[in-house]
Amino acid sequence: QSLKIGMIPADGIGREVLPGAKAAIQALGSSLPKTEFIDLLAGFEYFTKTGTALPQETVEVLKNECDCALFGAVSSPSRKVVGYSSPIVALRKKMDLYANIRPVSSVAPSPEEKPQVDLVVIRENTECLYVKQETQTVGENGKEARATRLITERASRRVGEMAFKTALARPRKHVTIIHKSNVLSITDGLFRETVRAVPTLPGVNGAYDSVTIAEQLVDSAVYRLFREPHIYDVMVAPNLYGDIISDAAAALVGSLGLVPSINAGDTFVMGEPVHGSAPDIAGQDIANPLAAIRSAALMLRHLGYGDGADRIENAVDEVIREGRYLTPDLGGKSKTSEVVSEVVKRI
Ligand code: NAI
Ligand code: MG
Image (cartoon, rainbow, N blue to C red; front, side):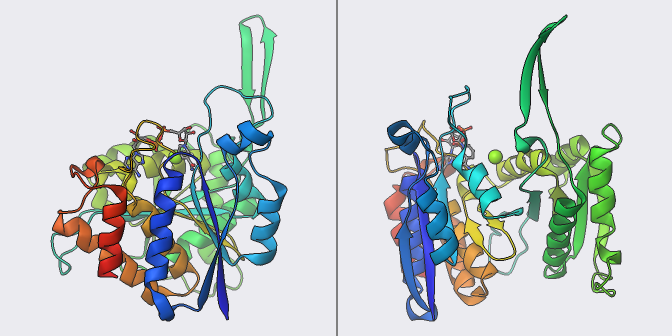
């Protein structure tokens, strides 16, 4: 048995934090099956050299050879660049990674205490406004731009199932559905109803009876997230709301550089820090590697290596709790590489 991990650092600090994730996995040694890392290309810089942001070979190696993958970050320009589209958005679609799972938790002052914030945002990953069907015409009002927002029953159901499954495995077993169906009653209405109906699906047979369900409009959800984050356990949302909420939740725990995620489908999982390529700090060896390292742990947990994941997560928590080896985003002075070696020591 072996574990083949595709490594896609892509751009900016993606290339600086992914080696930390690799080092943490390697530090687990023989508690994992024989592990092989396969370096793969993608990204905006790769696009500027070759005219494609996601080479076919990368997708094929992921599909045919890898059990899982780790992605760094990509620099997507805000202006429209002809021929370019984000490789991470494309990968989520091509690999059918329909749920983006982002746990956000603060580190408690001691291992016995409870964290102040301990929630998971589960974001639908394949549709909503991110289907990127945009058009622009010229009308009476000057230019008119339109975007299609697609919500399907299938995608809402499977991300809903992921949310209930996740909640069931957590102590509080509570799902909050995020939507705006008071305004968008057809699209968000479909999302809301479909997720709500998950516990009554054929085959579920009461498995989710212990899970409580709440719902919250997206705007007030952000408000309450800042005022009383402890009310949330699992938050499930359409793509755009989930994107925004998970970055907002990251602010509650101090830095984007701490928040990991996985993109999960039925047969593949890809770990990815929530942050982007951070051009403002790239190239200085000061990017926080902990989000990438935690993403590796989440990926391992999803694949069934919970013990290895625990060891990585405990080492990260220890480093944060001790406070001696932190990157500047957390008020410290350490280099990326120093933080990585401190985590590796503790694993
Ligand atoms: P960003 O996440 O790259 O950076 C936001 C702020 O957080 C910056 O001040 C940055 O220095 C800081 N930061 C982020 N990660 C950090 C880390 N690990 N350690 C320390 N500080 C960290 O978001 P921004 O600036 O909006 O976007 C920059 C580029 O990244 C854009 O081209 C954007 O398209 C791309 N991006 C890519 C994502 C992905 O690959 N999934 C996600 C978000 C943005
Ligand atoms: Mg985001």
